Length: 277
Image 1 (cartoon, one colour):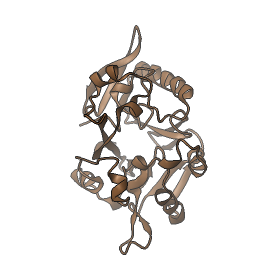
Image 2: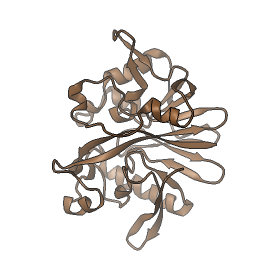
Image 3: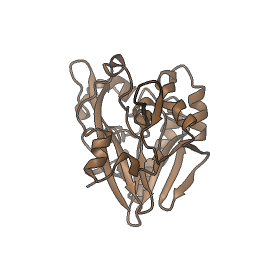
């Protein structure tokens, strides 16, 4: 089994939104913001080649939104989705499985594009099955007012209409070594993939723990819809990760791709940060 980081791009979000109740005087020292209080974050996916399947986890914003839309997210850097795949010797058509951790625009927008004459939409990964959790899909179809703007019809409905969309309903082993577990604190039914290579277990953190700065238990995002559930899920996961020496792969950490954690007197903390390759 081979794993490759897919650095699609970077984007900017308000530091206060990304760190919730944590005061800026604390988070600014770990994750600096610019003069507009914006922090730069990575849009990083993970490619898994099992020998039989080529699996991509999440796919970024894509490029079909308006200039006004992108003026609020400040895309910068990265290799682009197709460019990042090509960098590791893969094409869009090589992908057999597209796992979407959840359906916020920065995680799924790159899976759908305009057709040639912009009269409709088509799938970016023509040979792939798109996997979403059923609880999350149902939530995205009827979200609360806080989260509604994160679910864009043009990202979601073309997947359903294509016939390429499939659902998982509960924790499952999608393929040997690829386990998908559902978490509900950030959004209902977020998929967190656990990848066991036979020697190590890698966990794609998505928005459960978006960066190393979010490892402390109460350092969470204002975007989380169920903060108390998030605290419990995160505490349970971090204890499990420390006990089993999991390698955490961060989707949004601009500075660190991967890390391990260990138990300290004040809780689970960062042990070592490093790159995947």
